[in-house]
Structure formats: structure tokens, C-alpha cells
Amino acid sequence: MSEVRQASYRYDALGNHLAKTVRGRTTYYVYDAVHQLVAEADQNGEWLRQHLYINGRPVLLQAEGAAQTGSLYAVHVDQRGLPLAVTDDQRRGAGLRCLWQCASGTAAARHPGRHP
Image (cartoon, rainbow, N blue to C red):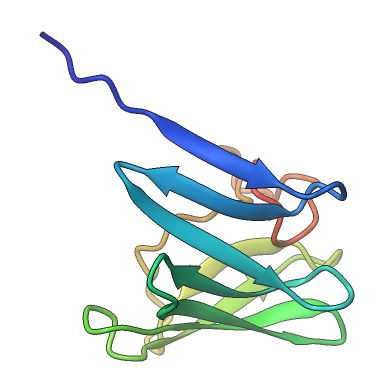
């Protein structure tokens, strides 16, 4: 018998991803005044990730919590400011799910912080 997986997602009127619940665990997404994703928190209010922008372009991702030990990751963007990759301090792929990358390796035309 196959396992049935359920997930629920919540968005605001502007299309910003506010929360997702998978297997009973909820992640909340926090945006700034210009609708840039600035943080992700778990259902207990613990910060999971923080996002840093310079001139509206994502440049840094800080993963927090026991498993991530506060690791910093560089966000590489294209000429439009859309994320292409996330790497660690050795420029290796960070192993984080890239939300904006197409199979071709070019970024999808999406606003950073808006999940597909």
C-alpha cells in the first residue's frame, strides 16, 4: 500500500507564501514591507532561515537551528536578480532546495520569495 502525503499551503492576497504544513509540521514565511522573504520559522516560532537582500537582490541565506549550526550561504543571482544557486563558503552546492531554478539551469521568471 502506498503512503498518502498531504500538504497544505497558505498565501496572502499578493501571492506571498505565508505557511506550509507537511506531515503535521508548519513552516511560516515572514516578509518585509516590500514583500521580500526575510525569514522562515517553525511552528514553535524558532527561526529556520533568514534571508538578506542588498538593493533588492538576495545575497545571503543564514540557516539556523541545531542541525544547521547557523551556517551562511551565498545566493547567486542572474542579471535580473533572480536566484540561480545557493553555495557554502567553499562555493559548493548547499544542498538546499533551490526554489527558483529550472531544469535548464536558468532561473524561472519568479519574484524571489514566491514559491512555485
